[in-house]
Length: 605
Image 1 (spheres, one colour):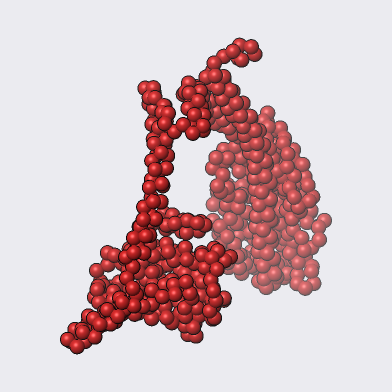
Image 2 (cartoon, helix red, strand yellow; image 1 turned 45 degrees about the vertical axis):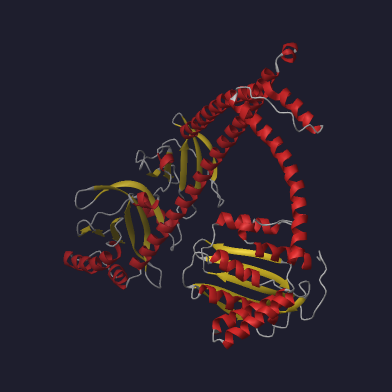
């Protein structure tokens, strides 16, 4: 501890920075590891439950459909008549006739179902009619002695049994693994037994029913096994144990809707599992995820955290070293110089040391002091210049009545001499000056401002000819509302001078004035160059700030409009701008709607 206290400030900064970051990275890495491993286990367990439930319900739906198919077969009139009237003393010719009667019906029911291998109809006397869709239909006189034929008597008449997976030989000589649905056939409506039926279904149907999607990474670690009531394997997705009697897989059985889940050990491996028991088929659908998947994912997480953590530590160590070296050396000198500035000494300068980074800071520091000195001088000089300019402006003002009378004289002479265009311009200019030079601090009716805009546009259209036109849309009954004088015309002027500056023809300035609630909304829109999104955000940001002034390049008239509205109405009202590059700009003016004159007060809120 004593050695650390005695170390240089650079060493202390390096050790502190590096240690702090290493501790933070280690803590974050540990939290990420625990969180990701637990989350990954939960996701794997949840996935096994979802798949188990989904597969079990799919199997139930499928065998429900097979049950309806069996009902459709034995309730058919052909089956009822041929089996109901069957006599064990029938001749071979009579049996062949029954076979021929049954074949079309069984063909129409079973052939479209690619998963059904064969359908067998048993009479009470033991004769069986075997429909095999890969072959034909044959008659057998070997009496069925399977255990299931006796078990059918122990269940209600409307129920059926599903037999576990067995291997059968088809009429074509091929062998196939099948599960079978068996049930008795009864007369309708007497409900007397007239035979039995057995539908053999190829276990390949489970490949289609239990198709895995979007689990490619997990597929090699995943097992789907369907178990019968006596633990026999109905189906194994990897086809290792399909048809086996008992493979030692012991999963818990739940009678609830929610599948059971947990961990189990099987064949020297650990698995996450979920099992859903079906009351309909009495089968268990178990989804097993090999623990190797958890280990693999955990190792991937460790590798990722280790690599990123080591890289981060190395980078932080390097950065900490250079930061401590660069910061500590000039720190005291910089503080001393800044204390001198604090005491008011703006003439002391830092010297270049040869260190590029520090020299940059030194130049910025020295330039800052130069700028401050220069700014102080400029502010002082500009205030004197401003005062002198105001005095000169007052001295040079022309009497408004003299200017107005002069323009009227020009109008009269122009009309006498037939120069009508000059007369119109003189008349418009005279009205414009007359309007502009009187009672600037008073509100005027909107119609007077519109007349002033008309005079202004008359002069501009004589000047620019067909480069642009003004289109106006004014709501009715609002021309008597009062607004500040010269509040709209500068927006028109701004649209012409800036928005349509590069437009040679086809320019449009669109003026719309609407009454909205208790506000008067003025829209001045042009179809000119518009502006970029960044420039628009910069201007609107400046407008939204109190006591701000726009760059004169954006329009002196717009600047004056903003300031006057704030002085008269306060910051609740003002200007907003919408613009799209190469499409045009819209300036929106928001004023209170007033139908009578009032005296504005500066700073009204």
